[in-house]
Length: 238
Image (cartoon, rainbow, N blue to C red):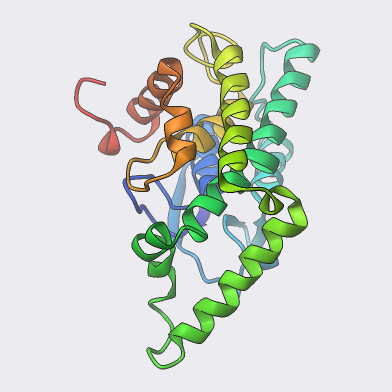
């Protein structure tokens, strides 16, 4: 059976990582039988989640997982879309993963209150005497990553404004449709929905969340996906 390795449900989300949530949604959309297990980062390709194992083969990166499902199982997540819609879907995936995601990371990892109630939990594995050192090293890497990306060179207010433009673009594309391209979710919905849902997470006090809350259709989009894919986390009546 195909196995997806995750960090587990946290913060009221299907997983702390929106990329794991994306993979979970893709697998649910695929109709394939699968199971989930806690990730072992020493075995993870590139040291990150998500990754899957199928028939002894380990594949990391959510986009490569999607490609595996498409090529090895013949699944077309964009069935019925025009070439133009497929291109737009890819562009929105890149907006979500390569820009909006980093705004979420900045808010969770570099705002002290959010870090203490969220990411700090990830270090419970470390021996108590070494934990402060491990945390300091990882936080420094996160800060360097954000600076290298470019987003981390801006003020928090500007980062929130940039994220707001991302969320506005998603809201405009969504319009009054249930999903990005109509009545059924497409491949891009797995990515975009995962990122929007992470942005709207009430567990963290973030400017990015307030930007997302400006758009009622994004909140309805989140609720629609929770009811469809993760009913155990959905608000009753949503």
